[in-house]
Length: 529
Image (cartoon, rainbow, N blue to C red; front, side, top):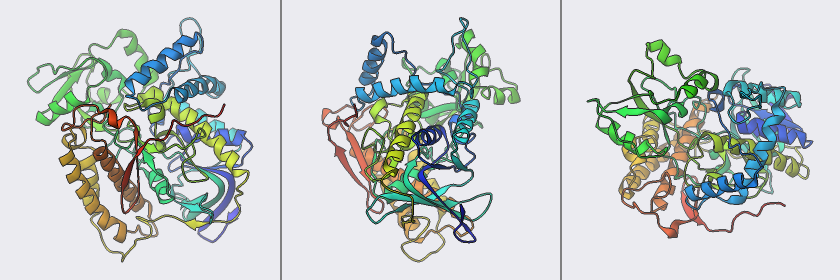
């Protein structure tokens, strides 16, 4: 391990994991246990960065006995997934999650119920991520903190051979030559101020697309979470018991079940919305400080008792974080269509388990635990026949290597265009073909400026790359939403309010300068026995 040049640290490993959140740490541990040498590069500090570290994540946690319990859970999820999820994948996730969480015993202090039974399902995010950092350290994973990746490297045969990035605190660049790479960079909320998501800007999507990977499910990006105004405290569990009021104090009717986004957004387009949490059961109130210890902090600062007082709320868009789109999974080891490139967690599509509706906290967490391990093992296996010697062709384009002359571009305007299409209630929640076509035109206009002319300066290339990634992601989302000419799950088209059997398939999207979409009509993925 020595610098290749004065400014670039060059390292080699069997497996490189990009991203140090929930999926990334599980991927790194699985690859290491499979006998691979592993380097994990995190945009922040592994163990504190990402959305899990600020949350109180639950998991899809169902005992294997009686067998009917899991069978019923899978059947129910199959119904609510609108035909896009697959029972075999759900069964795999339930089994592996059940096996995996108890292995953290000794690293995480699991609570017990009144009968002394260990509680593995719901964990405290900060301590959970701290335990996973201890795990990867104990296994001998090399961790590069504050070292965001900027681009992938590719061998002459088309397989991925590593990545390049920057060292934000120590200065200079890094290059890691690897036998295989796992993308675990999370999704993106398009800088919506969703708690814990500020570093989640879709970087992995762009890097993978530049290598030729396609994405799936990108139309399912209309999940929003309530939070007090002037706050990023997006903790959805407590709002399951909320009562909402308009400015005149009239109760806003909510449909039965968890779907409150559309009626809340409609009310917020008309005026301010308030709520209280007075319907919260006492036992839940007592558990909140343990599960989500930060939830009450803003209320205490403002002198508000949310269980008795009304407070104004807003909605923060979750983009592809609690949306379900991401890189297409091509096999049971979470490989993508690009050899040597694997995807895990929110960087991968969760349609296989969630279907057309959000996986929420529990299914998404179980997916991160499971997909991380499958991707890590798959990458370790691939690396045995693809050694980490040598570098490869650099693949980074937008924000790194402009296709025309470099000049000043309106980066503020580009971000505004992204957020207008991906976060604004009237455009993203209440969709129509006409709105989507106008949005696509706006996003394409921004890309026509960013792609040929934007390059981050040598000291700070990251911001330019993040903007390019969010813009590319927004274009894929809008194109997929237009291609799904129906309403299904969280994707609702006001001009196509019915679910159409002709669209009972997943939709693939890809491309950089020219976006394409097509139906994924292949047979369900075959799973290893």
